[in-house]
Image (cartoon, rainbow over all chains, first blue to last red; front, side, top):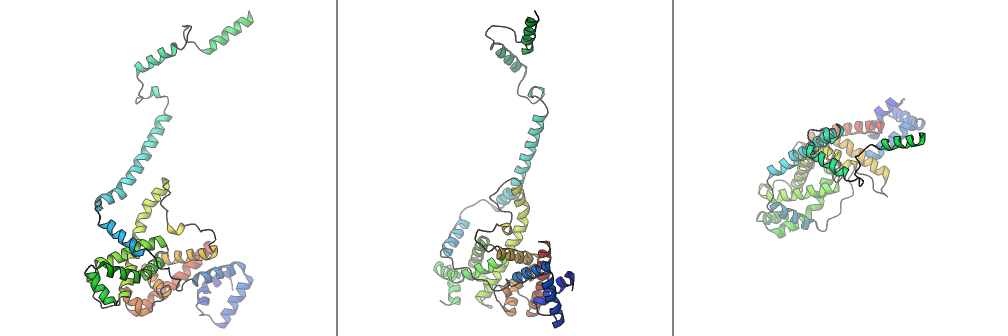
Length: 160
Length: 189
């Protein structure tokens, strides 16, 4: 008997529908094949669960909870239409809108500096203000110049 | 108190009679729901729905069948409705999972094992309920009622509103499919 044949007659073995010869072949195969032996054990244990189970114990506050549920049901609540609308339409719509907004913001951030963007809140007047403010940071009233200029000057001094 | 008197009083909206009825039968209803749903919290919710349904539609009970048969029937229907509605909710639950709402479990079947529980037994239970869910609804219910609730074919036929021979066919076909699904499941795992 090979593994394929074994799997085919496994249910019949559980149901005791096999001939003596088949039973012998079946049992010989279980002893020689570890995989089929494990399969048989699992199958048999699972199928044996199909029997009356231990009953769930009585629930001490069952009626109290039931009464509470009935009272909650009778209390005024939103209409079924609104509840369905909210559960089945609004929630997915909010998820979708959030996703679109997140992607859109990502594209805006990735598209370059804020000043190049037509949607930027900074206008030319704001830029002038920033420039003026930056200039006042220098107490000696010098013009703003790149830091490289200082390095160039230092080099010149060294050469002299 | 006799069931007929209880039901008559419940029909008159006698709360005390309803309480006695619920306390007498809630364990049965809870067990049926739990055997179909395989989740205690869901079974608790659905079993309460069963009693609410019974309270609201008590007038429709003609008394032709036993009270327990009626309870089984309502419990099975409510549990099946719950399973169907959960299938529909899966799409939206999966959205919640994508967007990180951890409060909503994707599926009770995915629940993790608690420390100390018999891992092998839990694995076997998981495989069994996986295979039962793969069955057509009627076969699943017939097998569950026959094996878990220990109901006879006749009782199952009354609960499901079909003939006894049909119950036999459902159970035999269901068991064959169940065995095949289990073998396939264990071959993959």
